[in-house]
Structures are given as structure tokens and as C-alpha cells.
Length: 225
Image (cartoon, rainbow, N blue to C red; front, side, top):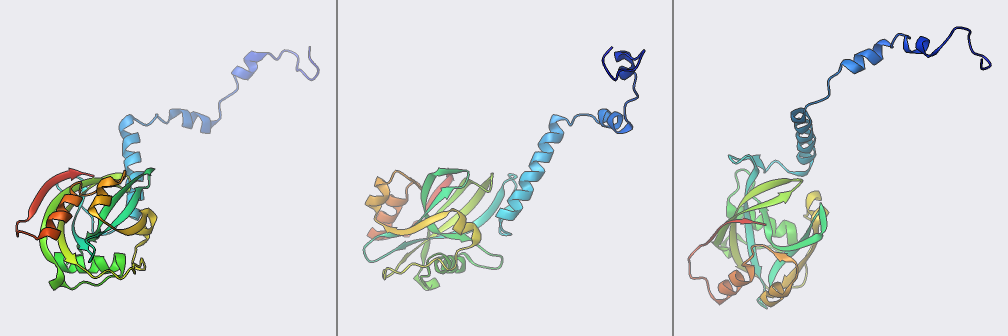
């Protein structure tokens, strides 16, 4: 008999020991169903998104976060367009170039939003009467803050004298998190880049506008960015 053993004790004595109440209670709790797990994951994702997306986004008929936006094709005296380079937070190696602009605030016109966004993102000032258009419309679906978003966009065209000074003082916390740089690029440079460009036809659109707008709004339709 091993030292310290009690005569007559065997393994059956340990099997017969009463199970603690809390252990029995835990055993009675059923495993969550797949539907419950999915709902819990969706709740966590929604909480994360609420921190990322501002009040300008609302849930549209499609179930996606949706907003209306004003964008500006800002071209300097060397026929270069002002574009912004950003990256995908969930896929940092993916970069793209896109135009200046953003969401239209409640009570704000598209022209007013375009003027405001140009100043906030670049420090440049344009007047509402400097804007031509809208010259282009499109709707874009893109992934942001871990969900698919739908944005309805109006594009305006404006010419500015380029003085080389671009500032980012008006960038929001969200913008500083995914925007890498701003640059004046020629349409030749946009066609040559290995990064994605949005809208996809941006070089052609700018070339046509520089040559002279014919007054026809270019309706691109729905694109996936």
C-alpha cells in the first residue's frame, strides 16, 4: 500500500465524490448555437463600426451604410488633378488614388459640401461659383470600417492656380488613419500608376473636362471600389 493511503480506499471512492454545485450548473449551460454566435459577432462588429463611421452614414434600403457625397475634380494651371492616396486598414498593401471630397452634411447643399471638403482636406479655397457641374455622378460600393458601404457621389470641376501649398490641418481622425498623401498628378501619371484609381475612368474624365465640358453630366452608374 502506498505511503499515506487509507485502507479500503480505491478509485471508486473518488468517482463517487459529489460534483460541486457550480460544476453541475456549468454543465447544464447549453453551447451557443451558430445563429447566436453569428448574432454576437455582428453585435461586436457593429460596436466597432460605430466608433469608425460618423453620423453622416445611415442604413439604407439595401441594408448597407449609405450616404451622399460631393467630390471635386480640382485641376491646376498645369492640368494636374489633385488626388489623395489612401490604403486599406485591413489590407495595408492595397493602395488607391481618389478625388477630394466627402459626405454632405444635413442641411448642406452639394456645392456647399464640395467647397467645405476642398478646404478641410487641402487648405485650398474655392467659391461655390468656381464649381462647374455636377459634371459626373456615380454610386460606389466600398469596404470601410469592416463593412460594405454605399456612397452616392456628385462630382464638380474647378480650376485653381497651384501655389504648392497643401495642408492637412482639417483632416479628421479617420482620415489621418488611412490617408497617406495628397498630390497633383497628370492624367499620364494616373494611367501609369500600379495603384487603383477611383473612379476608374478618372484620367479620361479629367482630359475631357480640360478640353472643355460639353454640359452633359456623365452618369457612371454603380461601381465597386
